[in-house]
Length: 347
Image 1 (cartoon, rainbow, N blue to C red):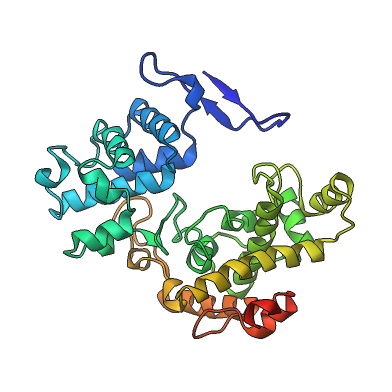
Image 2: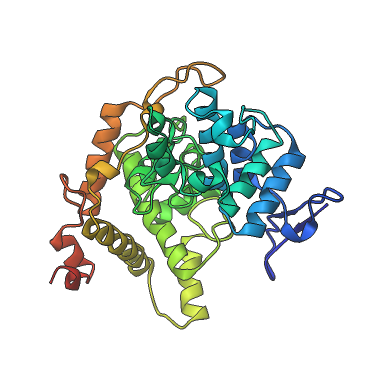
């Protein structure tokens, strides 16, 4: 019924939805990720069901991506006979059951029945279910994968794998940006980060694409550090570009900084998280995508599309070299930490 916005923002990205007697405007409305995870992931085409699931997640404080992906995981387990109606409390968890999805959101939030298990997320749930269920959990480091397919956006898939907190679609710029014309805003702003190479399509994961992932991840880390919205600030399609953020810091908070210094700050944040992971037992083995992404899609418009595993592992190696991380352990090297003024972490 409307579009809302944060104070003084011209983007107005917030959908406001109402279904009389069911979905109320105060809870906003589903956006892309929610429509995908509560809809496409689950085979649900009912916008009313998707809007209700979104409302319930907002009421309970649940992430719609992880929640929808976990319900989708449970549906696949149900389809393959790993879960039965006895496990679900009589709920038919077949793909396409529009009534089941919002019901499962409630059960997860209240930890009732099967919801008590699914509230742990799909990875932990898969280990409890057993019988091969872990292969169906589409997660990295336990974080459910968003609705951006690594087969179509390989550099995003690379960041999914190496990101300290797992799969996240807002931790680097997306591959289609480097397919834009050379004189486009997207390419001109990426050039401010030293990224000049263009591509005829988005499927490449060559060395320059790895550098694209590495640089833009650090830039997005700046945005998180400064608490800036990625619909407004960014290195490509957004309203304000890299040099504008330097101006913002100088004019807004009096910090006479540079883009070079900001990129180091973004890298420092990533490495602090990465070192925390290393201390807690994470290794290179945790920088993995699910096997399914390396298998050709069996049908549909993307039939046959998949990631090449050998090239992907080479890309991880190159990313580690760029980042200054140990090739075997995945940990930041002492030298890299010292370069970032983080030597105190290893003293």
